[in-house]
Length: 263
Image 1 (tube, rainbow, N blue to C red):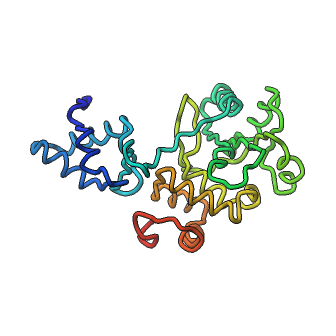
Image 2: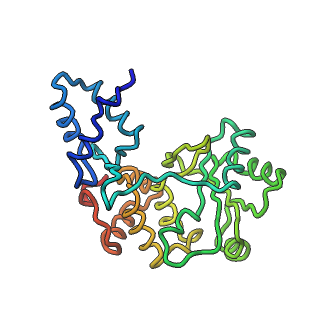
Image 3: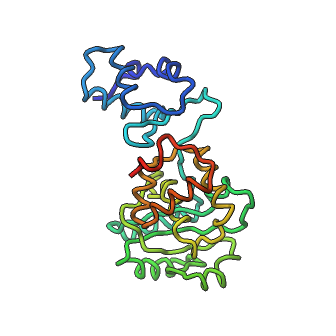
């Protein structure tokens, strides 16, 4: 059953939490329960779902939602990847020829808005299930995709990729990678991108050093980051403690809860 837009009381909700960037699930329950004492758990779940669909809240942790309030001067945004035509075409080719193969696409150019020094290169990252990577690589070569590399190491990267305006890197897909689907294309969530560049210094060395600090600080200030998603994926990459130490000691990021309480 669709929730009536009037039931959401969005103007009153935004006014209630006008000076807040985030809100707890319990606070949202209290807000709607006061308006409707007959509120049920099922109805409340529909309200939360509708608020997400309306672009008013975004889950950022266990029982915590970011408020997407257009009237808040420091308002953060929901990260929505804007893929280049090449990345979109690449993804659609994979979907057509390998409909049952899982993949994720993202581009390093999405990091440029967080950086001080702007790279002149873009790497399109295409992650594919390990068993299919070689087959996909050969198919894409047949389809005339240029500058495509299969699991390149640091030597190949420095020799052929680093100075190329645009390259395609075909990598093995890490299971349980955070993803989002837009325009029929499966792409990486920002949490995944941040963990990937942090954990793979050989492949993403151009983003390390001071630029890594810039990227994390600006990403956290501009977009809502789901800490549970971030650190769960960091666990898949085996960098949880290293990432916590980096955020805690190298950056000025202010988190909604202490790092030691994040699993």
